[in-house]
Image 1 (cartoon, rainbow, N blue to C red):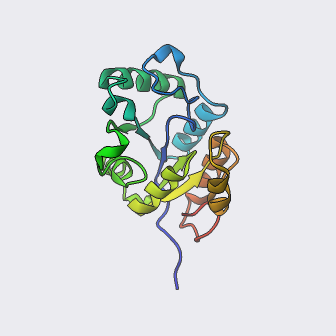
Image 2 (spheres, rainbow, N blue to C red):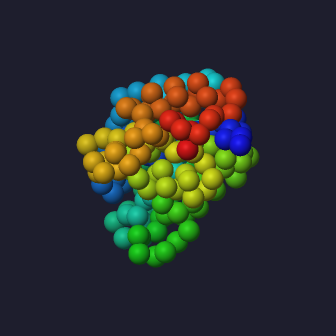
Image 3 (tube, rainbow, N blue to C red):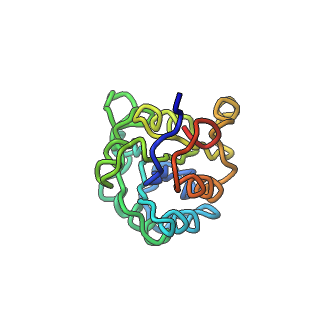
Length: 189
C-alpha cells in the first residue's frame, strides 16, 4: 500500500503561541512579539519555495473583546516582523457558535489552501495545541505540534509522532520532506 502523500507546497502556521507570544485577546500591534525562530522559520519556508499562511482562531471578536480591525492591525504588525506571509485567515467566532472555520474544524485550513491555490493534502499546519493538528487532519492536511508551556501534557504525549521542539525545527522537517512525498509517521500527518 502506498502511504506517500503529495509533495508539500505550503506551510500554514497558527499565530498565537506558535509565531507570536500569546497575549490573550490582543488588539494592540505594539504588543506583538515574535517567538524565537519564528521569522527564520517563515523565511526558510519561503526560501524553499513553499507558500505560507497563518490560520488563527480569534474568538475575541465574537466575544465582543476585539474588533475585526484590531485583529487585522495585529496581523499586519506580525506580518511585518515575520517578513511577509502570503495569506492570513482567521475565525472571528466565539467557541459556542458551531461555525465551520474554528479550529479544530477544517474551515481555516481549507480557506487558506484555496487562497494559496494548493490542495489541502499538500499543506502542513504548524501549531501549539491539539486543535491545530486536528484541524489539519480534518482538512486532509498534515499537522505538526510545537508544544509550549500552555500545551496540555496529554496533547504532547498524544501527538509525539508529529511533534517538533520549536517552530524553526518544524519548518526544517517540512522543508526536508518537501522535495517528494512524505511517508506516514513522524512529521507527516
